[in-house]
Image (cartoon, rainbow, N blue to C red; front, side, top):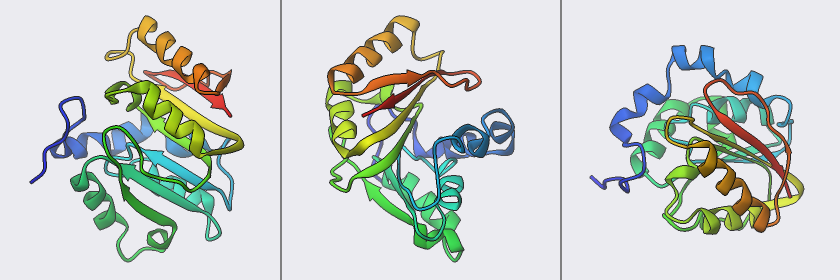
Length: 184
């Protein structure tokens, strides 16, 4: 079994990432409905076992799709198993990225990067890659955990995002998180 890079949450902890208690605290629909519409193409980078992916796939509807992207094949397999045989399966594209790039070229309307940018080996490369994928006026919702990411480190991440061509337009409230809504 392939192991995750040292900064990444291991697949063995997937259950702690996708549970009812977390859904009460960080409800995907409530958090993402202001930004995600039917027919959109959405990238869920660092999707893990799909805590946000399934709600995103429901929100984009039959005309939209969600690219579930993770560095760990085991996380993608957990998500694949979760949606197998459901209506959501046809709306989700499973993609294994590499440590330094997503490896994607398809333009997207919205990117969710939830609790994962701090895990990137090179944040500037990652943010540049994400900015390239966004359509004009596209949005990147960046959410980081306060325990792992200090105020100073988050400010540095935002500085790097601005250098890649993204502009912060809001800081939506998400429990237990530092956030930024960035636009291309």
